[in-house]
Length: 334
Image (cartoon, rainbow, N blue to C red):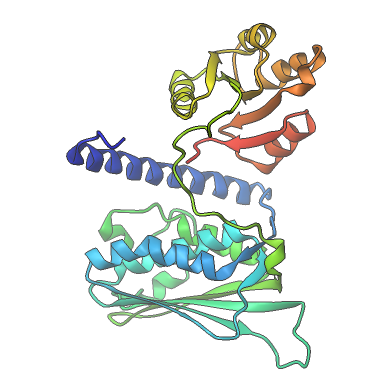
């Protein structure tokens, strides 16, 4: 809110960053559990590689400036803009490697280089390899420690001294790179710095395969002459209900809320909402059962129902869509 005092704003930023950090730790541990259980899968999609690299560069810009570090991103001219691989996993690997480099680089520089490993061919290959290298001017890693870097919860001495991190970033990155058809390598000289490089298999994509990404704008409210849209928020967590209700009311929607599935069905009968935000895990009657009951009622198919879940696994998403939900949003959401 514009009314928030600057000192409150900075406190809110700290809370937000701490929350993001905690979420990253939890996601790392979940990723490791899935890797160990053999349940990690490649979820390939077409995306704008240039845009991904720009996003990551922007993310590290502030941190490197505050440390007096030079941040360099270098991309060969033959690297295509639109590619297909697992964007989310590539992003996580790059953030892990750059995060380590920035943490240990001292006052020198961190450089990311991206190039094609493509044999000279008359026709462009449908599948080819991209190589990413992250070079830092940090303290380097002793030879006896290099072999243990990719073991979970193991940190090199510089990592232990910094008293940050969990020793999960590199083993997760290693597994993700293997899944993307590549390999990760490390070269390091004590006192001179370290280079982590990896290659992955990608294929060409076209701009038309990627949705236009509109810049995110803040919603002021509903456009004039709109009908009164009725929205139901069903969630057993009061904080989640409050957040969604505030966001929706500020835009001009009519909002009701329920803290379990039975209440959601009752309120649906009374107000016939146009849309329901339905938490999947609720006491008394869960989101799946509540949605099924509503769908079975006359006009129940006219309401759009969006599944809300803190379980962001693809299987949960697929299950929700197969059970008649119109869409799926994972918590926490921006």
